[in-house]
Length: 309
Image (cartoon, rainbow, N blue to C red; front, side, top):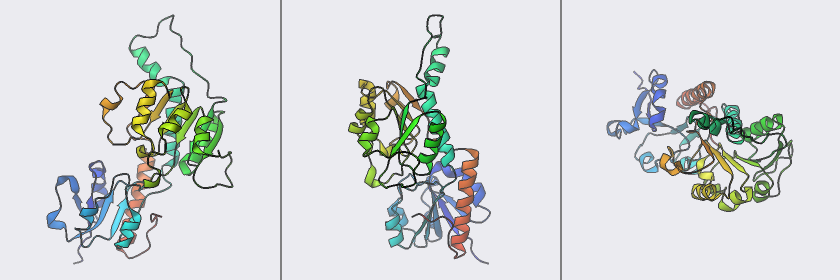
């Protein structure tokens, strides 16, 4: 009888994948304890790509041949390091970028139109006959997109439908882009009312949204991040919000996840969500299908469907 491939799920929040894997694979879960007895059997790691790959663990698994990222992003995976050791890396692109863009628009509306703060005020008894508040219209607001990939383009289209003026910046040219490209990230921030971070993260752009960029966006500006927390200098962001050098921030991602709620307890003008931008039923189903297809192809000796670039 042919032995079934053994796989190791690395992050606890991926535990629900067990039920979809165990009919075809022997499944181990890293948080239940180091898989000492299965060390010589494990052939694939199932990971969330934003978490740093445990290289020491990888080197203790002699039959490991695949790093299967359940997510679209794989910024925690050193792909070149893996390839140098004969490890294939897969991910799940193109299945939830529209959902993330929907979430970004929700964050913009929640902050700019005071939906979240209005809900809090009403519940606290702050709605009185004398307390009618105003918020800015989105029409005519200038939206800057950092990174015009799948998410960035989808955000731009939604912003355009909301009558916003869109521009963008990224490290590569996009000759067919429908919107003008700023000369630099600083120029984009300086000329934007709302700045949406939607670019791919890696070690070359950690802290891309620096204190200088944050302060260029200014005391009336809104920073939205639906990409990765490491792209923003979080200490500089919090300091700017407290000092009034930045108007507001709406964040779905954080430098460390889960983020410490105490870090945000006294930070004004924020809308915060727990990295749920792409976590829709349809998006997760799409990621699951790609992961299962990649696993099946790899173990059958066939080309995987979505290799990491």
